[in-house]
Image (cartoon, rainbow, N blue to C red):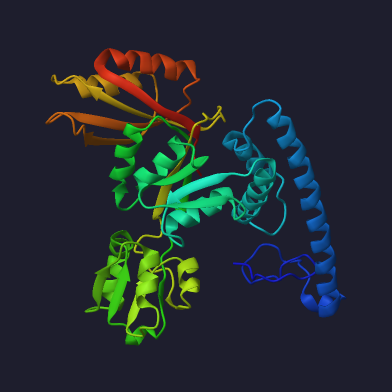
Length: 382
């Protein structure tokens, strides 16, 4: 384990690590004021380089505008992020480098072409956080009342893109998203896989809490922790984590499981951090829009299909993917809502629709299906 402190550009040696010849702070030869001045100078250089990058991005935007180009190109952004990770030789881990450059890319993108993004509201929820993470604080984020409204806004040109949750690794697929996607004509342009980190916030102390408010999903994802640490406390559902934060404000006996943005909005204090039951809990989001994504070399394709009401028809359709060596990553069924006992099947698999192998597999699938519709191919999330 390494301490998060800078010592002449090198970390202090902690017993058990291999790097035994690192410099200790007393051997740096510089005082704290001198080191701070050096940081200020480096910061000025960073700002200058970011400004130069922004100017180049603006020129890229001008070239795109003369060629009917679009600013949001997930494939190119993945190339940039992979490149900066590959050249990272410093103390910061690749996750930190990626997060920094995601925000730089987002800010530069909005210089090329201002982007409007619809998301499932209200503000300060996890969907709001996902939209801001992917498109940056300088994009125009538009709150929608439902997942269907997000998709409707994009489909009718009220927003360039939409960000909608599709799957949680603990609670499963978001069925409202599947149903809304089936009814729309949009494409999936990108996906985000975001770790779910839950915290408990309130205006009193942990020992004072008698009621906990949150959206049903966070309550379910923290069930074991709540039972173990706060047995007997009443759990109350709210329409969103942001609404939960509003409900508990100025009530010391109440607490909310919510995002930090919501907690800060309502002046709540952190009562307990990392209370999720599973450290591997993640939520996957779709970025939807009118444009299709080009191959990135590591892609995923989403498809919906329906099969004939005969014995073995679903097995025959899925066997086609197996025969072509295509890896299935998700399968979910939903009623058509048009005919009783008729179902739609939603699948994700690795590969891009421009790959001849994928084209051949889908052509063969159609022989066993009533219809096959492609939602899109997009870079696979990390």
